Image 1 (cartoon, helix red, strand yellow):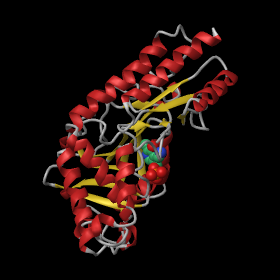
Image 2 (cartoon, rainbow, N blue to C red; image 1 turned 90 degrees about the vertical axis):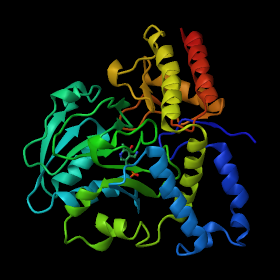
Image 3 (cartoon, protein in one colour; image 1 turned 120 degrees about the vertical axis):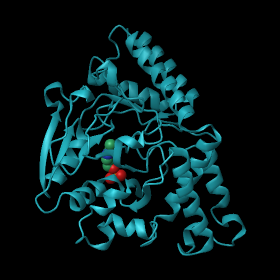
Length: 361
Ligand code: PMP
């Protein structure tokens, strides 16, 4: 079977072995006589899948006992609402770092609910740099301090975290969750849409410290209340059963391949291949991003003009490399090289980049 090399930013690459396993079990899930997607979420079969997925997240991520793992339908954008509704209502204040498109979206929603203090805004450098974390301070009495660990569109990634004292950091890890170990002692809550490193779209993984649950707005409607999801172990309502099942297969694979340290090593190796080709291209491929914060997940680059970029994307597509067009809002090119993208696909891309440069120089 031929499978294209997938550089889409999300939904994005899944391991072919996982797709094949899903295919194998699609009509008759492990001899149950039914597909898992036509089986009750209260059934023993799905119950096992759900539990297994939770256990794998706890094990692979090393989630401490004082954090709850939640699977909440709706993606990361719903979290942009749920976070302020739970932690900012009633005239409270939070801190925000504005580092690109996604943090600005989260900020816009938070501002509708409460007071938001902007601790850092990368506007002056067009969101191509990040501040030195040691220079950042939370404001006194702040309910939380929001960070976006990897800006999927801008291609910048935090490499270290600020010390915010008693103010909990809430981190949107949508586009780099499971790409490296997570130092949970630094965070009160992390969240991520599933459709990049974890699995198909349809839900967000939220990992939240117990004391944060105590601080949730007591007047939330049920679905928007983190406490309800925690108490019901993410089975308050019908969860996106297929996506959670598919994620569990991805998690199994990560576990079998050595966990997050190994994943991080591979990711660094993959991104370095592309950044090296860019750096040695005499400016043919340019990265707008400060070297110290280049993303290991979303590698953005531009060429001399839009025509050249269009041709690059078209030629790549003809070679079965898809998803290399930059986000519509910024243009240029972007190679998203998530966990499940094989090293050999990145090697194919850098070989093509070199060929293309030669042909056009
Ligand atoms: N945050 C980041 C960093 C993202 O990359 C995305 C989606 N690309 C979102 C939030 C929004 O996620 P969703 O589409 O799951 O709502």
